[in-house]
Length: 389
Ligand SMILES: Cc1ncc(COP(=O)(O)O)c(C=O)c1O
Image 1 (cartoon, rainbow, N blue to C red):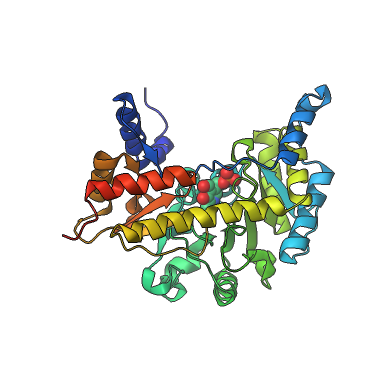
Image 2: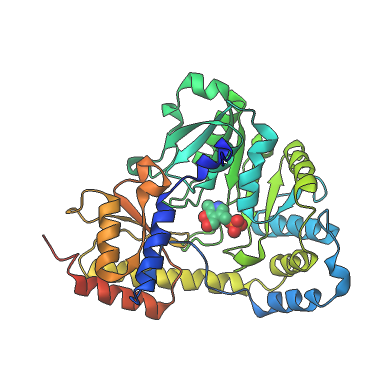
């Protein structure tokens, strides 16, 4: 069978290799400590689960939703006002997404014709690149370098490419580098987008998982709504990853196009999930702080523990990941990842899985509980990998 060429976007990736390694080792009865995939293990607060459970019993909730509930749109506007001080037109500037991932896969279909240029960070969360590629985009990468604090260097973007670019996908707090962007960055981003008439998609999945300062929204900055939109997700902030809910928020014409596409593609979101989302973002917000504290604690355990066994890595200020430079005696991120896994069962993601500029680093997800992290540190220490060479 000749499958469509676009499926090659999802070719044999490092993630597939890691999944096979994990499967094979488990099948051999050996332990696997998985720090690879960012799948949160902190459940939603009870009040949110109670709403899903109550609403799921109501037979009226099994119709096609088609559109978002007005209460949900209003709840998102109230959330953005309370949390970020951003005024949103609830009816016209919000669309739910079946998770940000769904929006990231589909947004380019509304904007991009084959061959149109899309600017994407390198390294990046894979769907930032794959979504535009599915729409036939010509993807150009913007390297995120440590010496620039992993911020985009706008000066380094080729002027001719910038003139032709149609869309730019940007995300801070950043996965995988854990970098945070400051106000100046957002002012420069908006100025750049205006100068070259580029739409900005800002993905804001981790604004609530900053450990020292509150996170921001792209839409807080003047002119943001002229140039683009933000995706936000309830997956990490409220532990709703499996319930698949996120939002596109921002420029009206872009939101209109998303609504048109989605009303034809998916017929709307399961009503109990819409109602759970209303509860999540309008109810008692202590759960967000508890989640943040849990990730902070895991970060401290893991990073302090790695340093204690001889792996001198940096402490991130946010996200649910650690972006760790590989020990000097390894040539590249993949050889380190495979050696670590074979000797300990600890599975991490080699940084080059996120783009060529991720080479030399691995990403560890803080998705295991404290006991498992402590155990991972013990087996890593016992392996001798981190003793000086
Ligand atoms: C940067 C980023 N954006 C989006 C997502 C996906 O979020 P959602 O569960 O809302 O699809 C993730 C998940 O790991 C992510 O890291």
